[in-house]
Amino acid sequence: MVPFLSKIVPEELIHMSLKTVIAQIRWKDFFNIKSLFFIALGNLIYALGVVMFILPNGLITGGTTGLGLFMYHQFGVPVSTFVAIFNVVMFVLGFAFLGASFAMSTLVSTFIYPAFLAVFQNIPQLSSMTDDPLLAVIMAGLMIGFGLGLVVKVGASTGGMDIPPLILNKKFGLSVSVGLYFFDFAILLTQMMFTNRENVIYGILLVLIYTVVLDKVLLMGEKQMQVKIISEQYQAINEAILTQLNRGSTLLKAETGYHKKDGFVVMSIVSKRELNRLRQIVGEIDPVAFMIVNQVNEVRGRGFSLAKKYE
Image (cartoon, rainbow, N blue to C red):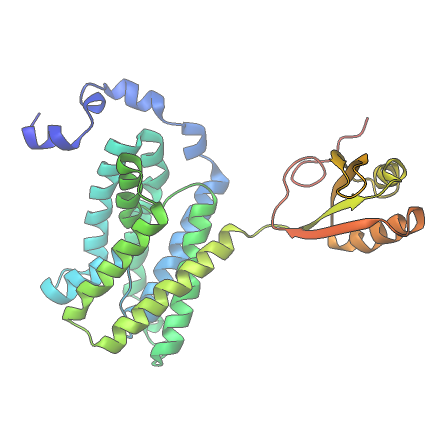
């Protein structure tokens, strides 16, 4: 192997046979139809946001697309062409440093995103949505954040500039989020060479919007209410939750802070619709019961993501 490459590629990968590499790939994850659908949909929305709002308005952004804009303005390389080449290079690095399974999870995005870009750029109607740069920034941020969120939510990656922060995290323990922000803002600064300072501010706003939207999408789920009930009548309340609401519960061992009495806290997850009924049940059993109610973003398990188990 070339000496330079031997310094970059991990030693164990050099001696790894193709058969061993293939054996490491979680093929059942790669061929999951639901995951492939959301990866494709996320990349489609991402590409639409770029073609409809970023390119026509001369906006700048971070990530691979930002680098593509830099290469286009400096050297005339089409954005879709640069993105395709860069994604392939990042795919190889991801394979070398992060493993075969991770690389396979980025494979669809590596090729489908630049393909979507190339197709949408040939549809003139998509490039005449708005001339207002602020509106374009907001819409692009919403679409890019939502598209990225769909991809990341199914455990995949969009490839490209996702890879360097992950490699730095694995090799040096650097925070992935800090790495992403660093690369995004560094890419924004490179674009100051062909744009004005106002566009740099728009670019920063765009990164902030799609980062917030990405976080919101990752937390999307069927919101439920977590209830903790402290009462001396915990046994009756627990029984009522099981029989009247047909919900599960957990008894958490506790000790009161003032009287130092041993007891149990009843914890249960109910829907918003069931919360008022639970309040009534608890009030009838123990009017002075102490209730703590929190909204949780996602609940998985029996009765929620899985069917209830009847015995």
